[in-house]
Length: 356
Image 1 (cartoon, rainbow, N blue to C red):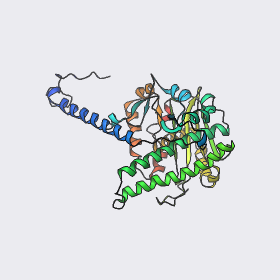
Image 2: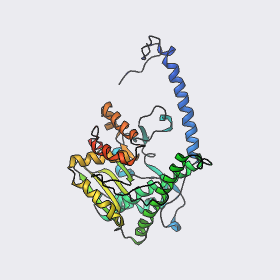
Image 3: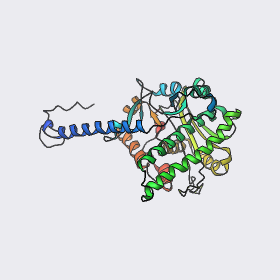
Image 4: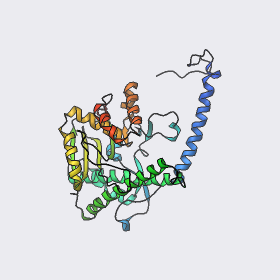
């Protein structure tokens, strides 16, 4: 590591001045600004928070909403963490200006206030306490936890942008489109939730189609998320979104995690969406293992911010590869779906599955 520059050392910018008379002043002002932004953001996020239990059985709620983990805590996050820390692409408020990925404590990473203490414990006990066993019930519970997290994020985002954009939607098309996109995702995710809620209440876990890929080594990252593919690998249309309130989106959910010297990639979707999505998943399955893992790695980075990486593996990865991953993540935040195919297939500058 580079030694910390002293105040009387020559400034690193090449000005020949002492650091204290040159860039130190700018850095002090930047740190002051970062502290102020962090304070303001923390206050705003607290003021515009959301707490609810997404379990269908409201009558048995404990009414104590907790920070539930969207990626299993003891069996996965504990395995990946180092001294209780994990690396995520979500910046902390204090890191907003400097950019880069942040280290989060295991008690904060992947959490959301979407379940009460009773339902988070009782509903997910099977996958929290036992090894993944390929069963439909295990896949169902991983999917339901993933869905609940994504729905919660959309609901929270809708609440916050409604506050930000209050009184501005009629005059600002961009803000109107953003609000409509959040509303459409919430409506379509609620449909998926209604189907899965029925499965929870009847203990019938057969409403999902799914594909499981096994990786013959333990990876040092985990992720979960979802996406609504518009084109398959041959650029044929799967579904078309018009950003209208009538869009009926079909989603693919994914969970990736290590488990006792192996790792698993779960892809799931509603069975009644087989017509639109099953052929696309089969295309991914028909790729060679190397291309499949490369494609899935890129897809994960495009589709979600819910990624956790072991800090030691992150630090031991070259700066060039880390920058390539961060740039790809940032470049794809606002890309339209039509550009995703080339990015997903052709990018080979990094592979999350190399964190192994």
